[in-house]
Amino acid sequence: MANVIVPPGWRMHEREATPEGVYFNRRDFLKQAGLGAAAVSISGCLSSVEPLTIEDVLAGQDFDCNANPPGHPLHTICPHPNADLYPALTTGGPPVPYGGLTAREEAMVFNNYYEFIGNPGSVNSVWGFTGPFQVWPWTVEVVGEAEVTGTFDIVPFEREFGLEQRTYRHRCVEAWSMVVPWIGYPLRELLEKFRPLSSANYVRFVSFDRPTQAIGQFDQPWYPWPFYEALRMDEALNDLAFVATGIYGEPLPKQHGAPWRLVLPWKYGFKSPKAIVRIEFLRDRPPTFWNDVWPSEYGFYSNVNPDVSHPRWSQKDERPLGEVETIPTRLFNGYADYVGDLYDPDLLTYIS
Ligand SMILES: Nc1nc2c(c(=O)[nH]1)N[C@H]1C(S)=C(S)[C@@H](COP(=O)(O)O)O[C@H]1N2
Ligand SMILES: [Mo]
Image 1 (cartoon, rainbow, N blue to C red):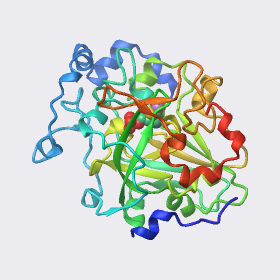
Image 2 (image 1 turned 90 degrees about the horizontal axis):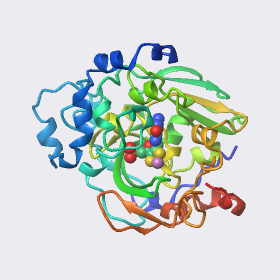
Image 3 (image 1 turned 180 degrees about the vertical axis):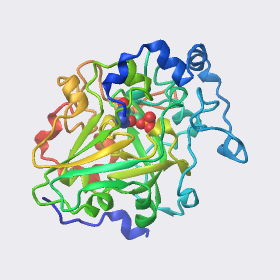
Image 4 (image 1 turned 135 degrees about the vertical axis):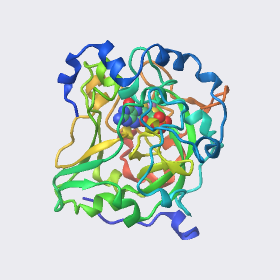
C-alpha cells in the first residue's frame, strides 16, 4: 500500500521448546534454570541495585551472560557479534518532544516482559530471570506476501543498514513512561529488504516460544504464547518505526528485548514486541496478543491518547520511571507531527 515515503522534517536539519516442555515440573525448571531461593531474593533487593556505570560492570570483567541468576542487571548483555558497531556514531530521529532522559539504572530494572514474569516475579525482577535465555544464534523467519521470504540471520543487517542512536519517549499502557536512547535502524529498511508485495496490508511480528528458558511462559501456559503483535503496513513503514538492537550505547540487555525488538514511540508499549523470531506479511488484519487476551481493554491501534481512558484507569497522566510526580500525557505521546496523518479521526476513539 502507501509506498510513497515523505522524508521526515528532522532529516533536513540533521543529517524452542514447545508447550510440551511444560510437562516437567516447576521445581525441575528452577533447578535447570539455576533459580530457586536465590531468585526470590533478587526481587526483594532490587531497590538497592548500585548505580554502577556500564564501564564498571562490563569493562574487563568476566561474567557469563547466561549465569543464573545474573549478578547485575547489565550482566544480561551477551557478547555481541557486531560489538565494534556500538555505541552508534550517528544520531537520528526527531527531537524528544518532552521529558528528561531516564537513568539507565531505572530502565534496566523495570521491564514489562511477560515471558520472564513468573511466580515469583514482577516487572522489577525481569532481568534476574533472563539467565537461561539464549540470545545467540538468532534467526528470523520471513513469510507471507513478500518477494523475499526465508530464514535470515538478524546480525548482518546491522552492518548493512548502519546503526544510529535515537532517543525516544516510551509510554506504557499502564501509565508509566521513559525517555531512552535506543540504537538500531529504521524498520522500513528491514521490511523493504524483503520486498513486500502490494497485497501486504499488514505485518505481524512474533516473539520466541521457549518455556524452558522463560519462566513466565513456563508458569503461565494459559497465555496464547508466543507474543504476537501487528501493524498496518503504512504504520510499519513510517519513519518513526524503529528496530532497536541496543540501548544506552550497548547491545540490548535481555530484559529490553535482545537481540532485537520494535520501538513505536507513538503507540502504547505493548505494540513493540521484543526478541522477534518471525515476520509475517499479511493481506488481512491479524489477531494480536493482548487484544485476544482482553479485547475490551487492548485495541489493535493502541495509539497513545490521553482522552481515551483504559477501562480501569485514566490515561491523562503518566509517571516517568524514577520519578514520583506524574506528568500529562500527550496525543501520540508527543509525536503527532510525524504520525497524525496516518489515522482517520475515528480511529482515535478506539481504546487504543
Ligand atoms: N515479547 C514481548 N514483548 C514486549 C512485552 C512482552 O511482555 N513480551 N511487553 C511490552 C510492553 S507492555 C512494554 S511497556 C515494553 C517494555 O519495554 P522495556 O522493558 O524495554 O521498557 O515492551 C513490550 N514488548
Ligand atoms: Mo506496556
